[in-house]
Image (cartoon, rainbow, N blue to C red; front, side, top):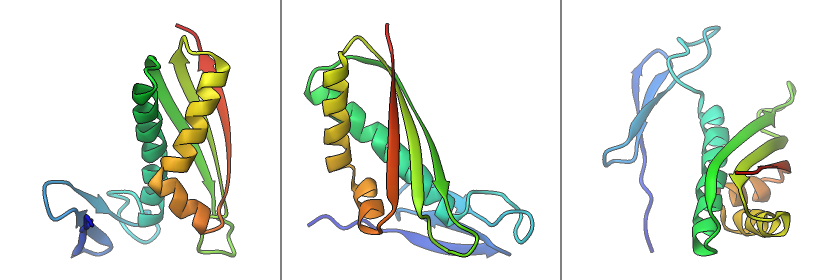
Amino acid sequence: MPIIKSRAKLIEGFQIVVDDEKTHSLILDLPKETGTDLGPTALTLSVMSFAGCIATIFILMAKKRRVEIKDLEINMEAEKPDDSNMIKKVDFILTVTTDANEKEIDHLIRLTKEHCPVGQLFLHADVEVDYKVKIERL
């Protein structure tokens, strides 16, 4: 079974460098009210990871099904109520430029939702996820 590793190391204040113990790293921080806003918060990074996962899995599924995708963009908003420390709802718009028909794109969305590991984490955390799809033609 593959193991995914990560390390978090304090730089100063609330600046934390996180890495995969290989070659990739980034800085997390808190907003200016508390930190220096040098990087996203860990919670923001989880939302960014979700958007990136949807995009990656969608493209993987399209390639497997030999569907040409010219362009893809995910715009995501996550709601975290003031009285909670958790995300309760995520809305995203997937905009895809393709000649594929709507039925094929719907199938790709279904496959993406099934295979996106970050999306599965949000699902199991009982986060409500709503999405819209915009198809732009080549």
